[in-house]
Length: 468
Image (tube, rainbow, N blue to C red; front, side):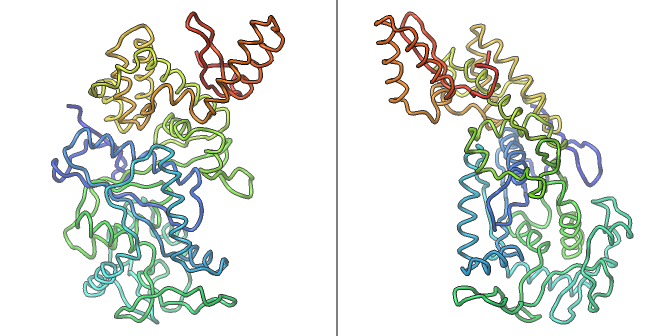
């Protein structure tokens, strides 16, 4: 059995993963704020932690993977007011879109997907504990966490007090004891001008008046409810380390003295588009749905896994084409042994497991999969079964080769074109036969003539040619 080690953002070193209970592993990952379609940056942590959850399930008998939905936030409120619809309408639509997009990337749903608004009582309870312990105070309808009461504040991000204050971009407010104090509860605001009867400002009753929670307290409450005061792994994007995860850690440890909250903190690196940070102002902002319109979700997933999760990944159309060609090669290796490779589930091959257990090294795992593909292409059926098993833990290669190579095409239309080409060849109209082949090639369909007739498969027409 391979021992898993992961880079711990809290200690800044790679550590062997020692779960609190090897029989029941707990993983919490910050999920989306549902006000708009998911973009590629949102997709990266979903794919990364989907692989980690799959790996943990190979290593441990029971894993509880919790990924939340933030369904109360200023951006959600603004979007609902702009549209003149209820907040529930915005969050329901956007959550459904998120689920559909992530499913196309091959991400399995988490075991538990709590919504922030379903956990308000737990948030109020934790805030009460913080006030009772002297770590929070009420002021002008707000409740704030007093950062000066936590001697460990700043350890996760590694920032000095001055850096913490500068990086927090905190609101200067007269009711704060310290500029770095952050909001746990805020009063419900009045409805914005111009909102109609379909729109209502959200709020919940609390000991401090009608209001709503701050962002950071939401994840502390949901992880506590479903995983307990202490759990194994907390994950998310590196952009969340400060202030979100720093504040989560502080308020959870102060609310539950003696707890350590998450034992391991795992963060993925940022996503670039054409070498630059993705932004609408640069014109390189890409939603997952926009990219799914030009490429299969499995190719997007492979592109995201070709870089180590802690490094930046650069999304380009050329890289997407290359990922698709790489998948063509894997599926062609499996096709040599279809359907036998899938008849009996195989164990994940040792080199793939070793790579993934070494801080989730997906580039090394993919290299090991290429070695398996080499052997499978040479006739090794056991290697084909191993390649399929490796794909299972990576969230890849779970379609049939036929579905992959014919995916998204009108089979009847292609077969009609093939029949027309055959008729043209029989009539010695070779110019028409060649034109049909060229038309199909432009659509990404390559024809292969053999003793048994003509077969076809898909490839990306933007690449130099079919994958070898």
